[in-house]
Length: 211
Image (cartoon, rainbow, N blue to C red; front, side):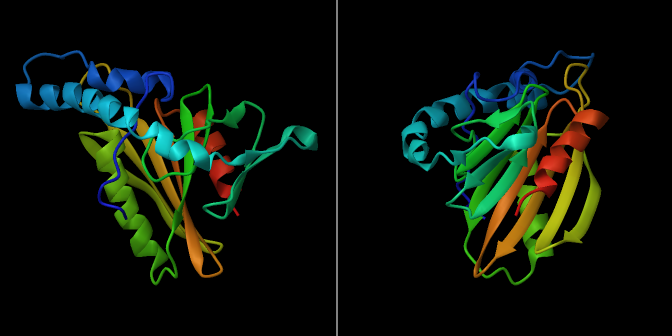
């Protein structure tokens, strides 16, 4: 993975609930270091994002409507296509550096795609490393639990659930799927906050359509 991947948060680009990450209410006695860390990282991310929008704007994927309410979102740079059901839409510019396609819905779900250089020798290890990296970058959870880890057609998928000790942040969900194609591969990342069963199933279904 690229070590310099950073969050490109814009208040109008991330799920509404993600804006709460930096403003948790204290449930009582707690160490100030964690509160300061939570409050500081969105501010830095916004500053970084301002310099990255222009660089990623050229990579907007193609969104073409079809019958049956399903809209295919094709990221030609990553070589991957998603089937978006009603309620999902093209997010135009991904909020994380390196991702070249993005879809989102009103329930707090975001799915991003990016190309990976291939061939991938060990898809399972690559996905495990990617989940560890993006969970630390995006979730900032006090406890992160693996809830799914298995091979899929032409790749591997892994999902985690993050929980928080404060009284504001509800659990969040992250899934990463690696899809191989030809001599290369694509990384598909799904993020949901707050995590809820129906919304999680909807996000998983869109990610399972990657091909």
